[in-house]
Structure formats: C-alpha cells, structure tokens
Image (cartoon, rainbow, N blue to C red; front, side, top):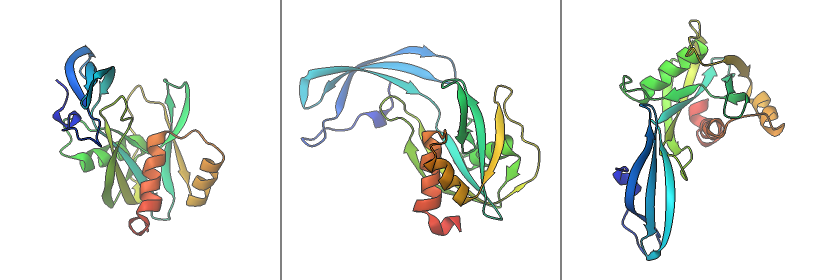
Length: 197
C-alpha cells in the first residue's frame, strides 16, 4: 500500500487525488515501483494512472574545507551516460542511526574527508511527480582529508575542490550538475549564509 502521507483530505482549493487501487509492479529490495489508479477527489470522473518509484531517502552533503573550498565529486552516471558534478551523498541505509550519520558516512566513503561539524539544513523532494524520495541536505564544516575514499565497487568517482567563485563560474558556464546538488548548494551557500561561514 502507498504511504499514508500520499493521501490527504481534499478541500475545494486542494484537488488531491484519491487512490482507488494500488499494486506493485516490481521490487528488488532497493526500490519498488507501484501503479496507483487514482481519481480526483473533488471531480471523481477525472481519473489518472500514476507510477511511483519508491526509494530510500538520501543525503546530500555540502562539505566546506577550513580554507573555504567546497568538496565536490564528479561521478559517472549511467542513466545520462556522462560525468556529473555532485555533492557527496547517497541513500540512508537501514544501518545508519539517522540521516546525519548517513551524511558523515557518505562524505568519508566518497571523498576521504571528515567534518568537525555537520548541520542539517532541511529536506526536499527529489522528483515529487514520480518518486517518494526526499533529499536531506547537510552542511559539513571544517572538512579535512583523513583517509582514502572507499566508494562502492560500481561507483566511478573523481574529487573536485572548488572555491565559491569557481563554483559560480561552473554554474554560469552550464557545467553538468545534478539537480539535487544545485538545490543543496543553494541551501548551504545562499539560504544559510551564517551557517556556511
């Protein structure tokens, strides 16, 4: 069954969908694809089929070194067949006690860096039209290289340290960032400027 948070009481100003039937199409232990047959609550004759990909929530970490540089990664992403600039991050595992622990783990695994301080800045939906996943953004301050990265065997990752000025130049030049990274950078560097200093 879909999570209860997917269904909310409709009002005249809130044309929420009512889920009439839901069934699983595919599941592999990591993600689940479901098919929801829906009707518009305030207009039952309006029907639609929604396909929802259920994935674990994930973290996106904006790491700042003690000299103010941002630790990014370049990761080859098979879906787009290209290298993509990203913040370190990944899924919150069942073994992680909380999202902050996942953020620290992913930061070290993908970069070899550790932070003296980590602050959660909020969460946002990754793709609310078709996914259940929320991305939890963390600001990691005073990051230092403390070991060797140990990414998953299937991950191809390169480190990229940039200043804020270089980051702006990359964005303005249309560098290949993923959307969650841009949202996380905006949270960390624009919406929380005091925390980032």
